[in-house]
Image 1 (cartoon, helix red, strand yellow):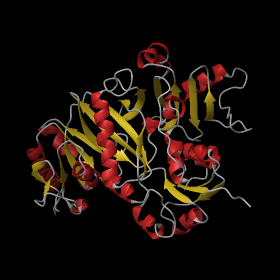
Image 2: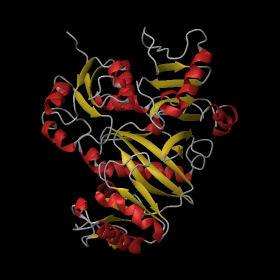
Image 3: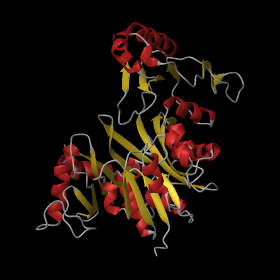
Image 4: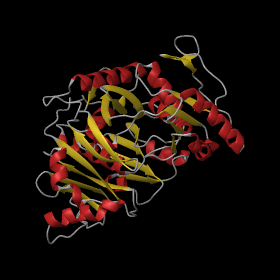
Length: 431
């Protein structure tokens, strides 16, 4: 009889794959649910459930016999989880998931719990709620009410959409950014409005409820990954993020501008403290990543994710412990470890257009074995690899069977390495 504890993971993508690896490292078994029979995490799953995320029967099959349930992406249908939250141990709860699924809830919540955000207003706006100040206005911003719901945006005519957006833009001013309230990621569902000529095209997004944000001309973006057991919050070193085409390209740690060479500088320490206090104030447990805009030494909340984060991949080789292991520590009821950065580190995302370059790096280090070697399996599987491909060069290919431009196919961690060294020796290897 298998006496190991079992972690059930909703979602079989690359994050589920890396959660599963760390769960096994800690002696646990893993069950995974995903609609795709070739989902990457199935390669590491002890039990596989192929089914839709909104299939109650499949979800019950996944959770049956589990000691803890987690999710690897934030768009899990919340209503489905409500059916099982009292029956199975969704250790993180569904509150952080619920809050992260709607940009309006997310940003209102961030403000209420002490984080500065860009100014924002929902479009279209229908009704309002009172906030903690009792005045029905956004904390710290007396000019803007806090609408928490929007009308049936799909019923608006084109003229009505344009009119609604013009009114909102007149309040915030330009430049500003219109974003869909739900299902946006990697730059999808967004439109920047810099002049009147942009309004009509942007209004096409208003076929669904949106949020209009004041544009922040930030100096750079950063993110911090935290894990809480409900009593203490640990945080990983803050990463400075470099995006290309709206998708994370590089994460650099220590974050230039937020580190003094020995640790976090004053701004970095303020970010860690503010985000940790936010997590405590919200009562969130488990893992939480917060993305921020940095401008003139100040910082603004952009969005959050209650799951391992793309920018946190560097922690696998760059830190004394990693985001996946600490999530598993939490899920298994084990003590959290305080992470320490081992060396300067650069993480490079491998998208579809970078895949051949990544395979070439693997082939060079394993001459004769060829690209596609999977070091944790006796089989050769195309697009799957996890191992060191040269000194300080750690390649992770996720085993996705279909590659296309802009699809996340893997990542490479370079450590010890600075951004300057990466740009000098490695940057030109990639598209």
